[in-house]
Length: 196
Image 1 (spheres, rainbow, N blue to C red):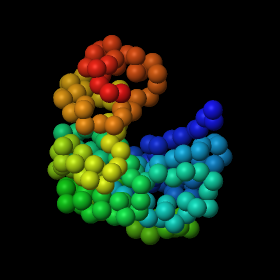
Image 2: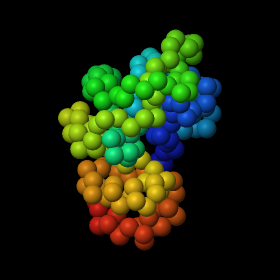
Image 3: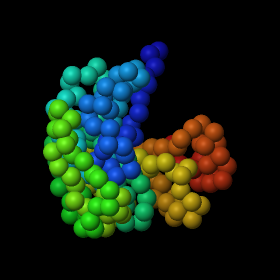
């Protein structure tokens, strides 16, 4: 059986937490150097960099998945994955309705296919959107996307307990290691009862 290397939670320089060097071509070139087979660039609360990534993805020998990391009104980080660029457009339009128009504190750079900076996203992408987990899940489901709870092992205990009431909405849960899976299941037995 063939095994695959993947990284499906990558931020470009559009995300304020990312380095300026994380331009579309740099991300894909690095993935090739690391022999990664499947990647998704999941910037915070925006899919605007996906259009450039779509233009260049065919130049690389890997599977590219469209994605975004959305921070819900409740403060939960959700990875959402999509099949087509049309799904991306629809999701981007949907998210724009819930953006908090607070000025960006950091650079949030948009690149063209030559890795030239062509603009900056004006609003702080690290803010929670005014969008509930349930509404977000309904939109992702409408688009036949995947709905993944991001890095649950990085939340504090109160946030984890609050998030557990939504656990049945998720297709998958992201954790940083197998050890973390075991630790999380011991602390929160509800995770063992879930479909994951």
